[in-house]
Image (cartoon, rainbow, N blue to C red; front, side, top):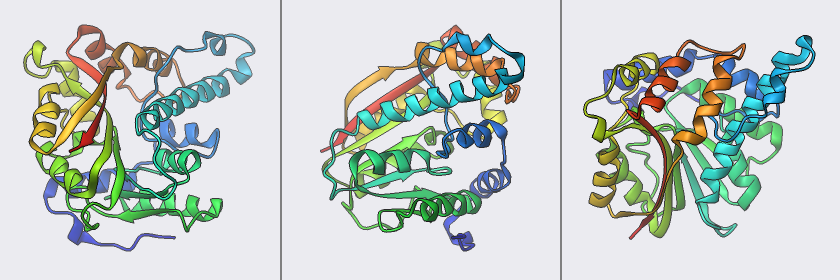
Length: 284
Protein backbone atom coordinates (compact mmCIF):
# COMPACT_ATOMS: atom_id res chain seq x y z
CA UNK A 1 0.00 0.00 0.00
CA UNK A 2 1.81 3.11 -1.18
CA UNK A 3 1.57 6.35 0.72
CA UNK A 4 0.12 9.27 -1.17
CA UNK A 5 2.26 12.36 -1.47
CA UNK A 6 1.31 15.06 1.02
CA UNK A 7 3.71 17.95 1.23
CA UNK A 8 1.37 19.71 3.68
CA UNK A 9 2.81 17.69 6.57
CA UNK A 10 6.27 19.18 6.01
CA UNK A 11 6.51 22.64 7.51
CA UNK A 12 10.14 23.64 7.02
CA UNK A 13 13.06 23.20 4.60
CA UNK A 14 14.72 21.03 7.25
CA UNK A 15 11.77 18.64 7.39
CA UNK A 16 11.82 18.40 3.60
CA UNK A 17 15.51 17.49 3.73
CA UNK A 18 14.87 14.77 6.32
CA UNK A 19 11.97 13.31 4.35
CA UNK A 20 14.12 13.29 1.22
CA UNK A 21 16.98 11.58 3.08
CA UNK A 22 14.78 8.74 4.36
CA UNK A 23 12.87 8.41 1.09
CA UNK A 24 16.18 7.67 -0.66
CA UNK A 25 17.76 5.60 2.13
CA UNK A 26 18.46 1.95 1.32
CA UNK A 27 21.27 1.37 3.79
CA UNK A 28 22.27 -2.30 4.18
CA UNK A 29 22.70 -1.72 7.94
CA UNK A 30 18.90 -1.44 8.04
CA UNK A 31 17.80 -3.72 5.22
CA UNK A 32 20.18 -6.68 5.60
CA UNK A 33 19.59 -6.89 9.33
CA UNK A 34 15.83 -6.83 8.79
CA UNK A 35 16.10 -9.62 6.24
CA UNK A 36 17.22 -11.93 9.06
CA UNK A 37 13.72 -12.17 10.54
CA UNK A 38 11.50 -9.99 8.36
CA UNK A 39 11.27 -7.32 11.08
CA UNK A 40 13.02 -4.15 9.99
CA UNK A 41 14.41 -1.75 12.58
CA UNK A 42 15.92 1.71 12.29
CA UNK A 43 17.87 1.87 15.53
CA UNK A 44 20.88 0.45 17.32
CA UNK A 45 21.45 -2.48 19.67
CA UNK A 46 22.16 -3.27 23.31
CA UNK A 47 23.62 -6.17 25.24
CA UNK A 48 26.68 -8.36 25.33
CA UNK A 49 27.92 -9.63 21.99
CA UNK A 50 28.31 -13.32 21.28
CA UNK A 51 31.95 -13.14 20.24
CA UNK A 52 31.81 -16.60 18.69
CA UNK A 53 30.25 -15.00 15.59
CA UNK A 54 33.72 -13.66 14.79
CA UNK A 55 35.13 -17.18 14.76
CA UNK A 56 34.34 -20.23 12.68
CA UNK A 57 34.21 -20.65 8.90
CA UNK A 58 35.10 -17.50 6.97
CA UNK A 59 32.40 -18.14 4.36
CA UNK A 60 29.61 -17.78 6.96
CA UNK A 61 31.24 -15.10 9.14
CA UNK A 62 29.35 -12.23 7.48
CA UNK A 63 25.96 -13.88 7.96
CA UNK A 64 26.77 -14.63 11.62
CA UNK A 65 27.68 -11.00 12.33
CA UNK A 66 24.53 -9.70 10.62
CA UNK A 67 22.34 -12.09 12.61
CA UNK A 68 24.02 -11.08 15.88
CA UNK A 69 23.57 -7.38 15.17
CA UNK A 70 19.90 -8.01 14.45
CA UNK A 71 19.55 -9.87 17.75
CA UNK A 72 21.01 -6.89 19.60
CA UNK A 73 18.73 -4.35 17.90
CA UNK A 74 15.71 -6.55 18.62
CA UNK A 75 16.82 -6.65 22.28
CA UNK A 76 16.79 -2.85 22.27
CA UNK A 77 13.18 -2.72 21.01
CA UNK A 78 12.18 -5.39 23.54
CA UNK A 79 13.58 -3.28 26.37
CA UNK A 80 11.63 -0.26 25.18
CA UNK A 81 8.40 -2.28 25.12
CA UNK A 82 9.17 -3.65 28.59
CA UNK A 83 8.71 -0.09 29.86
CA UNK A 84 5.33 0.50 28.25
CA UNK A 85 3.84 -1.51 31.09
CA UNK A 86 1.05 -3.94 30.25
CA UNK A 87 -1.46 -2.08 28.07
CA UNK A 88 -4.86 -3.67 27.66
CA UNK A 89 -5.35 -5.30 24.24
CA UNK A 90 -8.09 -2.75 23.61
CA UNK A 91 -5.60 0.10 24.03
CA UNK A 92 -4.19 2.10 21.16
CA UNK A 93 -0.45 2.76 20.80
CA UNK A 94 1.55 5.24 18.72
CA UNK A 95 5.01 4.69 17.24
CA UNK A 96 6.28 8.21 16.54
CA UNK A 97 8.93 8.01 13.84
CA UNK A 98 8.16 4.40 12.98
CA UNK A 99 10.69 3.79 10.21
CA UNK A 100 10.01 0.50 8.44
CA UNK A 101 7.77 -0.63 11.30
CA UNK A 102 9.86 -3.01 13.41
CA UNK A 103 8.91 -1.81 16.89
CA UNK A 104 5.25 -1.39 15.89
CA UNK A 105 4.99 -5.02 14.80
CA UNK A 106 6.71 -6.21 17.97
CA UNK A 107 4.28 -4.14 20.09
CA UNK A 108 1.24 -5.65 18.38
CA UNK A 109 2.60 -9.18 18.69
CA UNK A 110 3.32 -8.66 22.38
CA UNK A 111 0.27 -6.72 23.59
CA UNK A 112 -2.39 -7.39 20.96
CA UNK A 113 -3.06 -3.64 20.79
CA UNK A 114 -3.93 -1.53 17.82
CA UNK A 115 -0.78 0.31 16.73
CA UNK A 116 -0.44 3.40 14.55
CA UNK A 117 2.97 4.25 13.16
CA UNK A 118 3.85 7.61 11.68
CA UNK A 119 6.71 8.87 9.51
CA UNK A 120 7.33 11.79 7.16
CA UNK A 121 8.98 9.40 4.70
CA UNK A 122 6.67 8.15 1.97
CA UNK A 123 8.94 5.21 1.20
CA UNK A 124 9.08 4.12 4.85
CA UNK A 125 5.30 4.26 5.20
CA UNK A 126 4.81 2.32 1.97
CA UNK A 127 7.34 -0.33 3.02
CA UNK A 128 5.76 -0.74 6.47
CA UNK A 129 2.23 -0.95 5.09
CA UNK A 130 3.36 -3.59 2.63
CA UNK A 131 4.62 -5.55 5.64
CA UNK A 132 1.19 -5.10 7.25
CA UNK A 133 -0.47 -6.70 4.22
CA UNK A 134 2.05 -9.55 4.12
CA UNK A 135 1.33 -10.26 7.80
CA UNK A 136 -2.44 -9.97 7.36
CA UNK A 137 -2.91 -7.57 10.28
CA UNK A 138 -4.39 -4.56 8.50
CA UNK A 139 -7.19 -4.35 11.07
CA UNK A 140 -4.68 -3.78 13.86
CA UNK A 141 -1.53 -2.06 12.58
CA UNK A 142 -1.43 0.92 10.23
CA UNK A 143 1.24 3.34 9.10
CA UNK A 144 0.52 6.94 8.19
CA UNK A 145 2.33 9.74 6.41
CA UNK A 146 2.17 12.22 9.28
CA UNK A 147 4.32 14.72 11.13
CA UNK A 148 4.88 13.74 14.78
CA UNK A 149 4.68 17.40 15.78
CA UNK A 150 1.13 17.75 14.42
CA UNK A 151 -0.42 14.35 13.88
CA UNK A 152 -4.08 15.24 13.47
CA UNK A 153 -5.08 12.36 15.76
CA UNK A 154 -7.74 13.10 18.36
CA UNK A 155 -6.89 14.27 21.87
CA UNK A 156 -6.28 11.50 24.42
CA UNK A 157 -6.45 8.76 21.77
CA UNK A 158 -3.45 6.74 22.97
CA UNK A 159 -2.49 4.81 26.09
CA UNK A 160 1.11 4.52 25.03
CA UNK A 161 3.51 6.45 22.77
CA UNK A 162 7.18 5.90 22.03
CA UNK A 163 10.05 7.42 20.09
CA UNK A 164 12.74 4.90 19.26
CA UNK A 165 15.73 7.02 18.26
CA UNK A 166 13.67 9.66 16.47
CA UNK A 167 13.58 12.64 18.86
CA UNK A 168 16.77 14.14 17.44
CA UNK A 169 14.88 15.21 14.31
CA UNK A 170 12.44 17.55 16.09
CA UNK A 171 12.22 20.28 18.72
CA UNK A 172 11.41 18.62 22.04
CA UNK A 173 9.06 21.36 23.25
CA UNK A 174 6.81 20.83 20.23
CA UNK A 175 7.11 17.06 20.39
CA UNK A 176 6.16 16.73 24.05
CA UNK A 177 3.32 19.21 23.66
CA UNK A 178 1.81 16.97 20.99
CA UNK A 179 2.49 13.77 22.94
CA UNK A 180 0.84 15.24 26.05
CA UNK A 181 -2.20 16.09 23.92
CA UNK A 182 -2.40 12.60 22.43
CA UNK A 183 -1.82 10.59 25.62
CA UNK A 184 -4.74 9.74 27.87
CA UNK A 185 -4.21 10.70 31.50
CA UNK A 186 -2.11 7.97 33.08
CA UNK A 187 -0.73 6.95 29.69
CA UNK A 188 2.91 5.98 29.29
CA UNK A 189 5.58 7.56 27.09
CA UNK A 190 8.93 5.88 26.42
CA UNK A 191 11.94 7.04 24.47
CA UNK A 192 15.34 5.54 23.79
CA UNK A 193 17.66 8.21 22.49
CA UNK A 194 21.18 9.45 22.20
CA UNK A 195 21.78 12.79 23.90
CA UNK A 196 24.82 14.86 24.66
CA UNK A 197 25.99 15.18 28.23
CA UNK A 198 25.50 18.72 29.56
CA UNK A 199 28.23 18.12 32.13
CA UNK A 200 30.69 17.80 29.26
CA UNK A 201 29.78 21.24 27.93
CA UNK A 202 28.83 21.94 24.32
CA UNK A 203 28.54 19.01 21.88
CA UNK A 204 31.88 17.31 21.33
CA UNK A 205 33.47 16.92 17.93
CA UNK A 206 32.27 13.30 17.77
CA UNK A 207 28.68 14.35 18.52
CA UNK A 208 28.93 16.99 15.79
CA UNK A 209 30.06 14.27 13.38
CA UNK A 210 26.99 12.21 14.29
CA UNK A 211 24.74 15.22 13.66
CA UNK A 212 26.31 15.81 10.26
CA UNK A 213 26.12 12.15 9.25
CA UNK A 214 22.41 11.74 10.01
CA UNK A 215 21.33 15.37 9.34
CA UNK A 216 19.99 15.45 12.89
CA UNK A 217 20.26 17.60 16.01
CA UNK A 218 21.24 15.64 19.11
CA UNK A 219 19.69 17.36 22.14
CA UNK A 220 21.33 17.92 25.52
CA UNK A 221 20.24 15.50 28.22
CA UNK A 222 18.73 18.27 30.36
CA UNK A 223 16.31 19.37 27.63
CA UNK A 224 14.46 16.06 27.78
CA UNK A 225 13.64 16.48 31.46
CA UNK A 226 12.94 20.20 31.20
CA UNK A 227 10.43 19.78 28.39
CA UNK A 228 8.82 16.70 29.90
CA UNK A 229 8.21 18.63 33.11
CA UNK A 230 6.72 21.50 31.12
CA UNK A 231 4.29 19.16 29.36
CA UNK A 232 2.96 16.97 32.19
CA UNK A 233 5.21 14.00 31.44
CA UNK A 234 6.69 12.76 34.72
CA UNK A 235 9.70 10.43 34.43
CA UNK A 236 9.05 7.10 36.14
CA UNK A 237 12.33 5.45 35.18
CA UNK A 238 15.60 6.55 33.60
CA UNK A 239 18.18 3.98 32.48
CA UNK A 240 21.63 4.84 31.19
CA UNK A 241 22.23 2.37 28.35
CA UNK A 242 25.56 3.82 27.27
CA UNK A 243 27.69 0.88 28.42
CA UNK A 244 25.10 -1.56 27.10
CA UNK A 245 25.27 -0.19 23.56
CA UNK A 246 29.07 0.01 23.17
CA UNK A 247 29.43 -3.72 22.33
CA UNK A 248 26.97 -3.29 19.45
CA UNK A 249 29.06 -0.48 18.01
CA UNK A 250 32.26 -2.45 18.43
CA UNK A 251 30.75 -5.34 16.48
CA UNK A 252 29.24 -3.04 13.86
CA UNK A 253 32.68 -1.50 13.26
CA UNK A 254 33.89 -4.98 12.25
CA UNK A 255 30.81 -5.78 10.17
CA UNK A 256 30.26 -5.74 6.40
CA UNK A 257 27.57 -3.04 6.87
CA UNK A 258 29.77 -0.48 8.67
CA UNK A 259 29.05 3.04 7.41
CA UNK A 260 32.08 4.90 8.74
CA UNK A 261 30.25 6.61 11.61
CA UNK A 262 31.04 3.83 14.09
CA UNK A 263 34.23 5.41 15.44
CA UNK A 264 32.43 8.70 16.17
CA UNK A 265 29.84 6.85 18.26
CA UNK A 266 32.48 4.87 20.12
CA UNK A 267 34.59 7.96 20.78
CA UNK A 268 31.57 9.95 22.00
CA UNK A 269 30.32 7.18 24.30
CA UNK A 270 33.73 6.37 25.74
CA UNK A 271 34.57 10.02 26.40
CA UNK A 272 31.35 10.60 28.32
CA UNK A 273 30.23 13.39 25.97
CA UNK A 274 27.36 11.30 24.61
CA UNK A 275 24.85 9.10 26.41
CA UNK A 276 22.27 6.53 25.38
CA UNK A 277 19.21 6.79 27.60
CA UNK A 278 15.86 5.13 28.12
CA UNK A 279 13.30 7.47 29.70
CA UNK A 280 9.83 6.22 30.67
CA UNK A 281 7.33 8.88 31.76
CA UNK A 282 3.68 9.01 32.78
CA UNK A 283 1.15 11.57 31.57
CA UNK A 284 -0.35 13.33 34.59
